[in-house]
Length: 385
Image 1 (cartoon, rainbow, N blue to C red):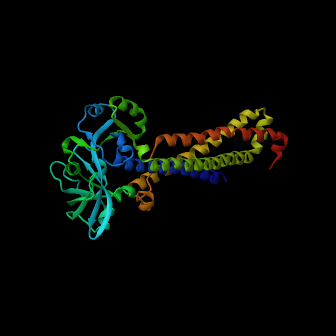
Image 2 (cartoon, rainbow, N blue to C red):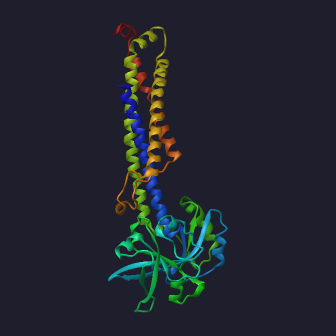
């Protein structure tokens, strides 16, 4: 029975830690993908509140924006232009978003998610684009394929077409973006709109960590002029972040259930030890040992079993996380979950919290042996078989 109770405690800690690691890993992956397309913060004109795309340009460069680059934990501040367009190829028509970038843009995210090829040459070439794997499959495109993209300009009813060459194919798993976004040189939309090199649609700010947005926002706002607004990615893409926050409730339910299971098994260990040592209890009470001291003996015996269960549970959990992250043995439907495997993130804070919770429950368990031992008669216990 003791072994069964120990195994149950080990399973409880494994379930808690794995649940934490999956939720944390899932949230981190989704946040990184959304930020990869949008940046942590975006500087735009107030007129762009009603229009998500770049219709009212901003001067490039600007002194106030340049001053932001010196703020600690600001990794990059890069100009972008996002324009609605139509991709027309092989008798298919698709509404897309052309995202124009220059050399200042941090391309680590797209490089990490490249399936084949490379990112467009942003120095001089104005004909190269990087498209998603979804669009490539739908339009039967590959590297060096030619695609025709039609752009719209405000006030004009006839779109202007550009013949572009596919030099790279990416796949982030974030279908909402992969199905629409293509990446190219910022000079393409600048020329089409007649903006020249001194006007852009917005600036995207990349920080070292999404958790410091609230800390840095007021600092950045103080440096900006009053003619622009600062947009938080969590507000711009609230559909994703609101959904991720809902996942926390699932973790709480699992945590409560596993804590209850662990506590029941801790009580079970205590009661089994007491029943097995009932003659010993009677003898010690006859010799004058108090209920408090006897309870402490059984508590420390129980804690030894608990610590052994926690050790085994932690080792198994760490092994599962490492194996999953290395070989992705547990797959996911990428269309539904935005990634092809179950992400697991190893966080020492969750490990400490979960283990401390079990240990505290074990310490609280001293109440049970005190109640039971107090009811045991020394004379009856000594003669008990």
